[in-house]
Length: 145
Image 1 (cartoon, rainbow, N blue to C red):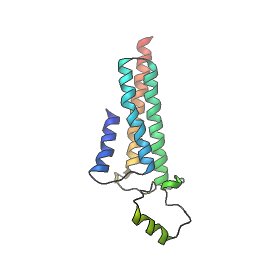
Image 2 (cartoon, helix red, strand yellow):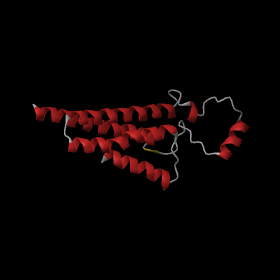
Image 3 (cartoon, rainbow, N blue to C red):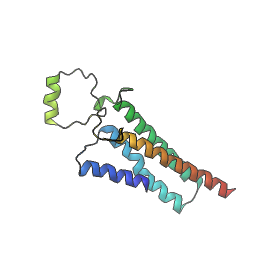
Image 4 (cartoon, rainbow, N blue to C red):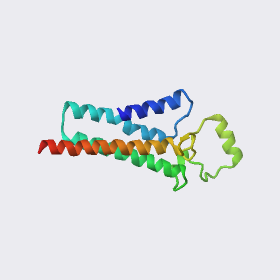
């Protein structure tokens, strides 16, 4: 349910509030889209592999989100496709280009709450969800023994 809530929140920010996602934002949605499927299989075919898979998917989610936070904070370079780093283009060329198409930059924070960007909040929630999947995995192992 946590991943579904995060996905719904992302779509609400996009569709209702008009915050278009960057490339890294889109990448961060994939793990949350996969989790309901993993959850379904963990119920229908209970096996520790599903709980381990859920843990792994949420760890990947937190790594993607953490990487995005690093790009936003200028700790490291982001993707060339969505960064405002040196592109070799003049300011005039960029302004002309940006009028034609809307390009969302990965290194710009468009919204924050309590000094955390959406990527920051995704990192926090993904780590919490990863912890819950890991606890479930450990509890399942204890029950099976």
